[in-house]
Amino acid sequence: MKIAIASGKGGTGKTTLAVNLAAALGNQAQLLDCDVEEPNVHLFLPLVQGQKETISAPVPEVDLDRCNFCGACGQICQFSAIVPLEQTVLIFPEMCHSCGGCYLVCEPGALRERGRELGMIDRGLSQEGVHGVYGRLRVGEAMAPPLIRAVKARMDLSRTVIIDAPPGTSCPVIAAMKGADYVVLVTEPTPFGFHDLKLAVETVRTMKLPMGVVINRSDIGTAEVKNYCAREAIPVLLSLPYSRPVAEAYSRGQLLVKEIPGFKEQMLALFEQISGGRQGS
Amino acid sequence: MKTIAVSATEKSLDSPVDLRFGRAKYFVIVDPETMDWEALDNAPNINAAHGAGIQAARLVAENRVKTVLTGNCGPNAFETLQAAGIQVATNVNSTVRQAIERFKRGEISFAQSSNVQKHWS
Picture 1 (cartoon, one colour):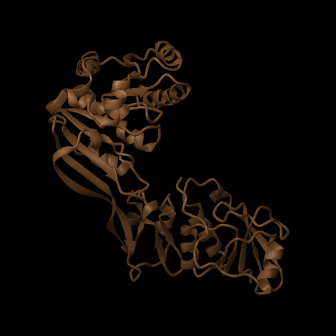
Picture 2: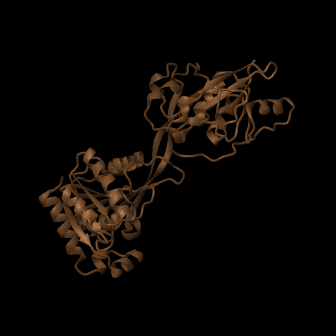
Picture 3: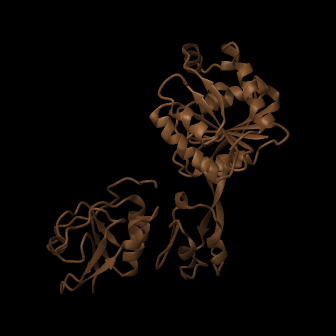
């Protein structure tokens, strides 16, 4: 089973939930850090036996001796990544989405592929036995989805796969949630949290994925989030009131399932709700 | 020969220079000898999600311009203009006509690099 942990608003507790859910499940869990622009999972679940891989995406390179300056590559490129001029061809690798169109339309065969480094993937085992696959985007790289897809290509479907998604509703979020069996949206009952939850719900509905909500710091703000979930028939899987010991453990990079009595049981009950009932909207 | 392109907010020699190169409303291309001019509509690039500067540079290059006078020019647009053999002056903030006159008097200095940073969509 693949469970994506997402949210509209950032800072609601996605990573906290993802790492603690994974740690509660232990060896049964594989945790994917798909928040590759700001990967934080490693702070809570460092990998003790790990291997690193560099991930790259193909971008074109031109052989000007073979180019006939027909301009076809520039016409098919939707991202201005390849720009044929009168006597040369410019390539902007950071604009390239690696669609491969330019190679297909290049009649003289003047284009070949080279790799542009997207980032790194760390794979290994955490001390708790969680199997980790952590993506990390190269500083300066703007395109997260291809790296997120590379992280997901390393999924082990014999385990419970937990995907820590980036915040928001843009392409990286879609890439992280795509193909999940269930999406957990973490929110907080503030006006900002509520506003972004609605955007996230619309996104998940468009993707036709079952979902449930976890309300973090549930005793602050207003009842709007709760009422909205009831009205929209979205199950509230868990409500976690604000707790200073939780905040302190988090700030030290500790696991709540280890530090907070009863937290592990809450995580296991949450997993039971998701996997047993498969309830959603 | 209309060899100078000036980014402009209106289709006129008396238009203010559009401070944005890639997302300029128009390019007024001018023959500095005769002051004969025409306007190129940059509409397709104004709302482009990305690559506006590159495409605007291509547009002026296709019109066989040798010089661009504009306000701000980012690195991708600058690189494209350079590769097309076009010299660029940035920080020009007069009207199109005044900019051309300054160019003719040799008062315009040309940029060695872009004057604004890359922006991501």
